[in-house]
Length: 404
Ligand code: FES
Ligand SMILES: [Fe+2]
Image 1 (cartoon, rainbow, N blue to C red):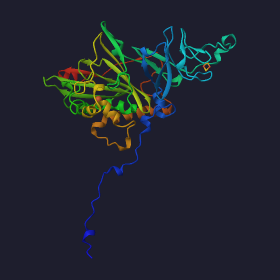
Image 2 (image 1 turned 180 degrees about the vertical axis):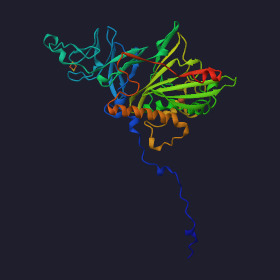
Image 3 (image 1 turned 90 degrees about the vertical axis):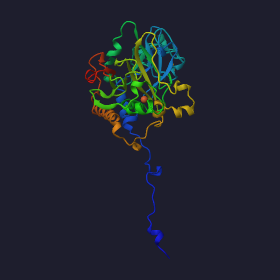
Image 4 (image 1 turned 60 degrees about the vertical axis):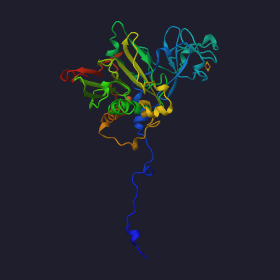
């Protein structure tokens, strides 16, 4: 019997999907719930949870950081954000009635103000002789240019409310517009973890591939060439610089920034606004698998804010087959899965900004674990103003390169 057949090495396939490790997420980055390290870090900052126009005399459910809350605006104009379960016997305040000074529970009529103080207990002697003993759990809120921000963290750690100089300085004839537009789906929720959405802001290479080539040019000619990219750690987060020489010889220095944990400052990708960014946005983790972006943008009164087009149309006008041919941010980010699988990634040189932001986030996690305030938190004043760096700076190279 010949043994020749066994002498030939048998080809073994490599890199098949069978060899993949079981999927795992980096919990440090993706958790949002109270009591988790990242959930506690997120709870050290103010987050936008709704548009001011969502706070009305009709109670509305809002969700943030894995919690469900009831938002309303009492007749005296104050927005309130309360835990939904009534502190009496637990029915939901969603069915409550909003009055001049608060919201009244439908079940036994207890009335709570925007800070949860009990104002009336109609079934108790003297309408609630001991009202002071009962408080509906609540969260502090602030309104800023048409957004309702809430602080969901430990009361003794509440930070100064951050404001942004480009939004605080609104010239005559200009206005700040609040929107909760969400990658083409207005008012909707992106069905994936917030971190993969947020770190995308430090990924300028995808702009050239996804937005300027793969799906046609979704922005403008100035954005359509491959930039020279660098990233820089800043006091509060990371910036990316994207430099291009335009066809007409001018130099285009574009700066984008993220601040730990959820602030994203991206100048208009339509380059219709030059100089410093006219907008600031926040990524809100709604739950571990749902995300929403809130934006404030300053524009001349009546001006419209351009939106990306997909084959000349709006995102919501495309069929499923057309989304396959003209994908955008929604498809790329939701396409990573409800929570991206970190142990299957292969980070490369173009991911340096993503890695830098993950490091900045982990340093903030460590600060909270040590008992310190995380980056960007100040507590000695009522408000703290941030000077925006992001922008579209166009001009002679040596004049614009140092801006931002
Ligand atoms: S359950 Fe709300 S008043 Fe009784
Ligand atoms: Fe994008």
